Amino acid sequence: MRDRVYLDWNATAPLRPEARSAMIHALDQVGNPSSVHAEGRIARGLVERARGSVAELVGCKPSEVVFTSGATEATSVLRMLSQTHAVCVQETAHDCLWAHFDLTHAKSGAATLAMGLANSETGVVSLPETDGQGRWSYGDTLCDTLLLDVVQAVGRIPWSFAWSGATLAILSAHKIGGPKGVGALIVREGTDIAALQLGGGQELGRRSGTENVAGIAGFGAAATAALEELNQGAWTRVEKLRNILEKTLASDAKETIFVGYDLERLPNTSCFVTPGWKGETQVMQMDLAGFAVSSGSACSSGKVKVPRVLRAMGLSDGQAECALRVSFGPETIEDDVLRFCEAWLRQERKHRDRAA
Image (cartoon, rainbow, N blue to C red; front, top):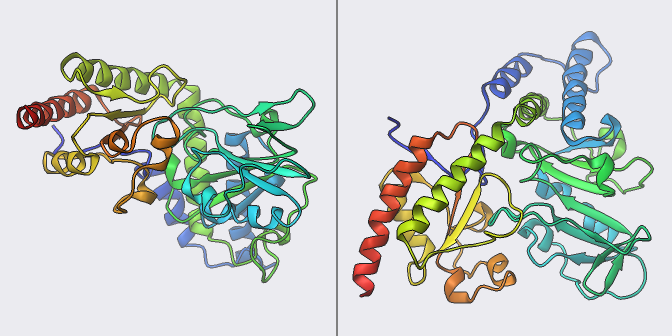
């Protein structure tokens, strides 16, 4: 039996052994991938092999993959688009999108819609709507460009950049078992963007700076493993574990609300609200019991604020403060889930007794 159980995969997935091995191998290569000698060509080969693996995972052309330091850096493309486009940000989008703009009421001129395909806090999947004429609609705004945050979705549900119609997409290595500090911006062929970062002109001039060869190699290895896992149905088993969790908790905790229960969700994510029992308190109690869970997005943890995403979904401030998120992965086993349920229900009964 494990001493600790990790149930916070939406914050970061454990590093895959394939990614670790690829990174160690890359660290042993001395060359700069921009150098033309043999050592440089070896390093370049590692980068391009990884580019192909990421492209295969997300269903795009290798030339459409721009490596970055992470998904957050990739969103800086919005700042450039704003010079010619109004930017409309989905209410439930991740903070990395909201950090740039909140212009949700543009009604004229060119517009870009920035949204998440799957929400990190609730797992709810949101498909962009179209007007039937090749434009994306958000409320009363029509947008001719779509940027999709697929950080949580890619590798967990079937998705392809090629058939999505999106102009841009962002993803992060550490959500699929790759290393932290590396991600990608996917740019549809024929789309002109200014450089994300100026300098030596790497990444075809779109993101300068010597490539993080080890991180990129780990990203590529994780992408290959994630695609194989998805094709083999690993996340179908994960979904069964999530359903076991929710059924077990609901059978005893009658006041607990499961957010997005009747909506399409990621197979691994459960967000639930127990009135009067703050999410931060639950996180600490579960941590002491040996379980790693969260009260929302890892980027928002430790900040004293009511979860914006849950308010946007119609929950009151009081309810939103009492949310807990549990997220699984293919390494999670049923015993992990049942032990968590037992520990959580024990604390939930104490909460009820105190409130009585």
